[in-house]
Image 1: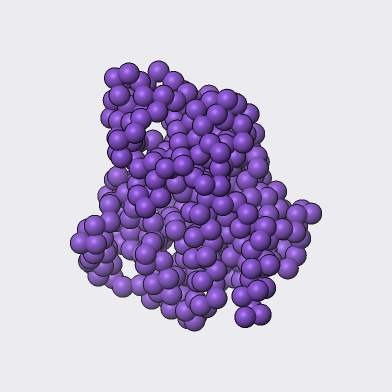
Image 2 (image 1 turned 135 degrees about the horizontal axis):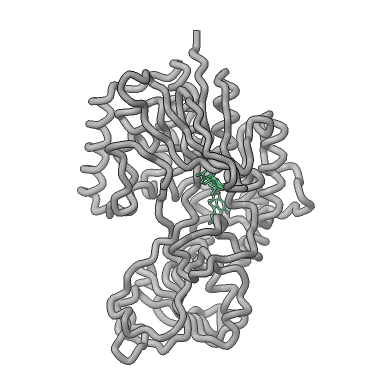
Length: 432
Ligand code: FAD
């Protein structure tokens, strides 16, 4: 007989919602704590930005810009049994819809999966405490209502699934010579619209999906846009398809005359440095000995999900990046749900810890920086297939894998037209 457990889920973004669905399906009793007033997390566009342009206090959760459209096609952003493709949720049928469409999809998912009734909104988890000696396996969750006037409340659960999102607290590299910088600095967490960059010379640091989107958008109003990235070596210089966009290698330093100098040797006098350099994992509420975030590595975690010492009762859903995100949320969630019920067997604590060490050793041998521990490239399919095997599912279809890899190539091409020409190209591919 599968064991039914009481489970607290922290966060009602896409990860928390699908985690709750999988837990409910497995027969667990679920409470989802969500500190904002609604479900959807990241996809609830928030026009506010943080008072600190680098967002180091990160009071605002959301990091979406007003114009944001998905960087993956709808087909890669649904859940099994509840697709984003084939149905329109907020009047935006495009293959790469705007954020409002994804938010409406998540709203509908929450309702139709029965999860909505399990979500407690305006309930911020302020502490998750590991079981104390003599307490059995029970985890204490302390939460606070939004009004801040009522006392914090404590509840105990058999298990906690952490889904608090990881695109809120900016990761800002410390540039050499930054003391000489006299212009503005901002992190993409706080970017909403291009207008403030009118006629400016802007250095965009980072060439991920946000860096590409934002650089492109800013180029429509700015005087010059200079993108700095370590992934540009084979295409340095002016970008053909734009009047005013240049690709550079990494920022080497800020010179003593205040110019931004790039590793290939050129320098530019800029008005703003805009960091599109990603985010830090942050779990201010976790009070669990031995679990750390070190150089953006959350660990030790077995397969990015379970801390060996506390598996399966403490888990993390949604840490991996550079994969088909919604699908990895779902597979991880299903694995967690089954590990809790006893239908998926985990290795013992020692074996899991050894596997984590082995993974770290392999990463080091491959020259992968610690801070990229949860970025799954290049082994993303291996990870997804491994998860699928844990829950008795087949490996990823080649079509999905190809679609994802094509989307990545499109993002890095700097050519925005892929979003609107995708459908037609897919059709042509099929006819060939
Ligand atoms: P979130 O959506 O951040 O949800 C976390 C939730 O936890 C939030 O609702 C938050 O309020 C809540 N929370 C946090 N702390 C607490 C607490 N202490 N107590 C209670 N609740 C708490 N992914 C794609 O697949 N396709 C895309 O096109 C895409 N574009 C993106 C564009 C941008 C600019 C960004 C920033 C991300 C993008 N992503 C994209 C990745 C996106 O983050 C994921 O798709 C996904 O929605 C993240 O879901 P999540 O549930 O992990 O986190």
